[in-house]
Image (cartoon, rainbow, N blue to C red; front, side):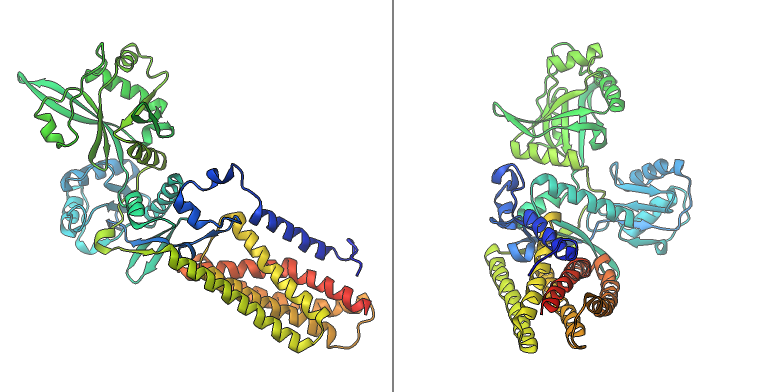
Length: 532
């Protein structure tokens, strides 16, 4: 059989796609195994022989499903320049901290990121705070839950947290249920405690100055929040040096000047630096009563995780103004693990609100050993599907030269899908395996249509006759493919759990079939028929 590149270019296109898929599946991704697999949980999600990644159901891991904490008042009218005043008023009335209220003039909403479970805020109290801010509202204007924008921001931050932590294959999606929206987090190869520690809190990081001042001939300690995540222009990697763990940070130009001025005003620029005797085992109020000195506190979600003095060199840079020109310093922690967590929170930013895992959420952990059994059974199921299709095809045509290329083409289509999954880093789950099986069935069905149209309508003597019959069959296949894509598109777009993975694989498989494998099979069949 002679394959002319000009006449049988579709076959060569299929060969090219197979080569590209082989590179995606098997080629080293660079940096060696140590660079690709950062910990044991990553190794569980990725095949040791290929670049394929496996999701929760085929590698084991943790799933967390929980709503976001918050209440939303809708239908409010106010100007954008009033937003900050509204937020401060509601925060003060409810006793909440900065960032716990969001006012959006464009959407006409005010959100409070607390409820009766977390933050101890009721609808009635939220309504009273809004009335104090000048709105005429009732409890009917307030609903449980947050806005779509907040949910999208939460998904983005959670994805960044998972990526920065080095856990591969993690996914974050929104899941709708009657009357409530949930955030679904799946992290293959990770245990429950590891995931909850990573995503369970908002990750709000503040730098707070604690210092004494004289009031009515009495020394009183003040704590003033100076920096948040938004004030950092660059965050380095967590480092441990000589038993000291820290994260190098650089402030933004706009924040550096204000921070330097605050350090001067609050007495941190004195010659020789400052003295800090803060006890992390005591509360902030207890420390204030024990004369802790001047300290820079690193506060995570309201808890002081580290207290540090200002060194003489840093104090000198505050005093002579050079800090604003090069606003870099080291944020120290008690351990390397804390430094790593601080790095993640600074780089990803804080969650707009907290996931209510404890009260209304669910967690699920699948043992890797059980997932390995699912993987084996999935492979057996796929092999059984291929074998069943092969028996039917051979029984129908009883001509190996027709049936064998049909099965090889169908197998190539599945291989191209595996290449796509490896290239985009799609973690394969049981829903995707179901999509692969569906693609095998629809693919062979289309190839049977092509073979029947060409071979059952009389002898084919010329390329013109072949092309006419193939074009007629391809119109039927194209119409069926369009119908399938249209039917599956809502499932691929909407957050419907496992159905989304099934729909995505089916749509990609149909597109690869129509554009690559079906035309290639037509060229193969033309060579075979015209040679006969």
